[in-house]
Image 1 (spheres, rainbow, N blue to C red):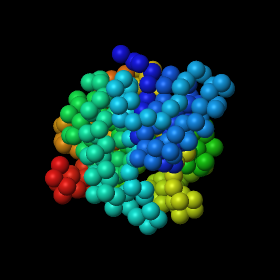
Image 2 (image 1 turned 90 degrees about the horizontal axis):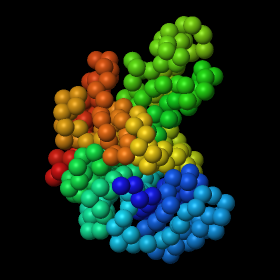
Image 3 (image 1 turned 90 degrees about the vertical axis):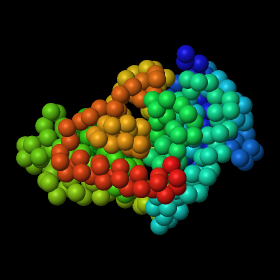
Length: 313
């Protein structure tokens, strides 16, 4: 049963921006911020609450884990921040320890139908850790995955071709990180493959594809170098996932889901085109990617599986 409540754990740049984006979206009747620094959470909640007369009816408060008792979705953004020059996977050990405490605290109060959404990096590892620690069915745990990476690629294709980004259909699959894969074999604009579109319009060439992929893969590092953190676009991505769940949309997003045999991959969380609705992950689609892309996806899974083994998961 949808109750209209979302809890955001972590009032840092990503968490507070996510809560603000959800406020503007009018998706929920109640938004609760939880942070180890309660004054920061209280300040953010009060700042947002002062604008509620200008948006759809909503209450915004700071709280504690007991506020998870009637939550529809718990978004977890807490964790050690990614520093300049640090890969997402470098964050692994610190954030796993943080998540162990957070998930235990959530599940002490949360309803059995709650949906947990890890956003902290490395998000795929933390999604799987959350799944194992929570004891929830696999459909109720989904990470933000490569929803942002896919949006970045759509933006870059749009910039190169002049086509509305919403009509550039593509996916980044695999890990949200260094081993991610651009699924060019299923990318299309107006029903044309990228190869066909480039030949038809002359606006791009195959070399541009590698350039765009590398820009997507490295864009977070570039933003961190320039401003210290990324938070606007990931907040929009998280809000979009929440919208799919709250509205039972059955929309296709590249969230990080738990694999149990799809693509012959098991016991790991990865991103591929996935139907997201009121129950969380409704279905993981097995898309006929190219052989090279399938190898990249499985290599990505192997990398993450090895890391999970190293931390005893």
